[in-house]
Amino acid sequence: MIQFDNEIKALGEFDPEQDKDKANKYNALMDQLSVQKLEVKKLIELKTIIKDDETIIVLDREQADLRIETSNDNECFFQLEGVKGMVHKTENGRTANNVGLWKVKQEVKFSKKSRMIKLHNPFTNENVDIEKDKNRTTLDSYLIRTTDSRNFSAYQGGGTLVQKKVPVRSDYLTWSEAVLKPKVLTADFAKWGRAQQIHVATQAMLIYTSENNGTMPTVDNLQEVKTIADKVLANIDEEMRGEFAIDENVIKKTIMHCKSELHPLQAFFGGVAAQEVMKFTGKFLPLNQFLYLDCFELIEDELPTDNECKESSRYDHMISMFGKDFATKVHESSTYLVGCG
Image (cartoon, rainbow, N blue to C red; front, side):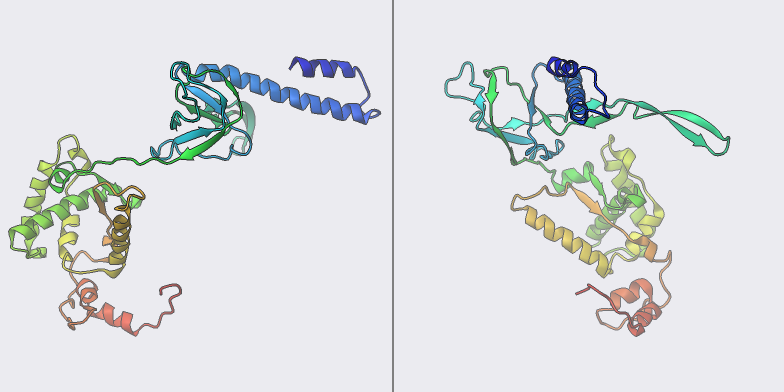
């Protein structure tokens, strides 16, 4: 900054209209000076951000586009190559290049300077002062926070940061353990809490089926299944029980068509199952425990009156859920579908 100050003073006084070259040089120096002041301010703030056991790596423009998701444990590691200096102080032959993987820690963010703006209120016809960007932060893509490097000598220059992915070990509960401590994923955020209700209903339905030699329940068995659902809810771990609830309507619709197959849902869960089989090879992380998706809004609260008119064909499931009249209307409709195979 002293260099830029001296160069600006050396220009002396001049008329910007008459001396264009000096004006351009003055503007360039002022821009560089403002950048230097901003960098100094960042360094001062950086001292308050980082801890003693942390190191900051400054990336060049070619690597500044590197985006490392710090929440993914298998993606937030990197290796250093071609770094000059940074020799281990106590272990011979070890440098920053061959010490192994470095862990990426929390992103480096600087506080954003707030500013006052005026907003016009059309109802009162008054201008209101608003402080914008208060308590906001901005990410510095050129800085990466990593682990302790105090055991190495000083950095002398050069080097490349290479992102590395490492395997992550995930432990899963057995079926009997998962039933007591169920972790239910939410697939449809428009129905918050529905998946947990379906979990209780499904477990009750499965228990009823196993207790009745594989015979699945019908609407006539609603009270029996509901009694089992009470026991299922009571057996869930006390710390997790508050997330689950019993909804009689959910239980009713779950067992009402538990013997039927809805092809769009089959396609969805078939795709999920195929993805889970692929994950057995070690690529991507498997789903953790239970996943439910429903479309109860498609069916009525009561069974259709013409759902027994079955034809011993592939349309029997549609007839049992929506009735013979609906199936006939679908068959007689002439619809042109694009992109459906």
